[in-house]
Length: 162
Image 1 (cartoon, rainbow, N blue to C red):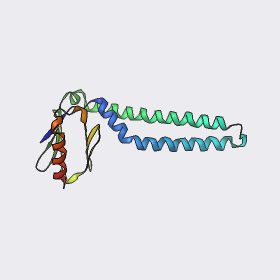
Image 2: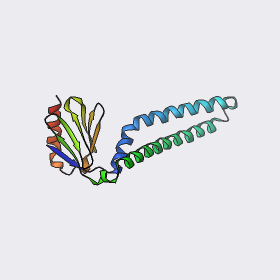
Image 3: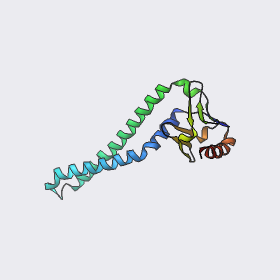
Image 4: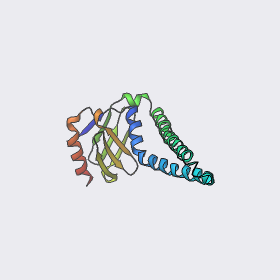
């Protein structure tokens, strides 16, 4: 049994942003608190007149930090996309269930993961994710070329994991 799909640059950018979103959010919140504490400590002798300045600068720095995280994500994804190459995105990706594991392959490469290494299979409205020790396989639901096989594939994969 197999699923065939196409992967786009947008899928990679979107998935990795969602994957790192909690870490980014935590970084932005912690960064905002740190900025607030620093500005507050520098301007505390001028309170209460400086509250609008303290809050305004905190908001500006926190928003800037948010955009910095998004920029860093875009840069890392761009590097990954460049490393994978145009041919990778032109080829059809296939995930096959074999007797001894999951085989992910396309025209350029293939990788096999034994069922014993698969930790979790998650399905959202956007992605089917197969999480293992090292490899992480995500399949954009909208890009599956044989969507009628998706439910049977997931059921079969889960039964082989146990």
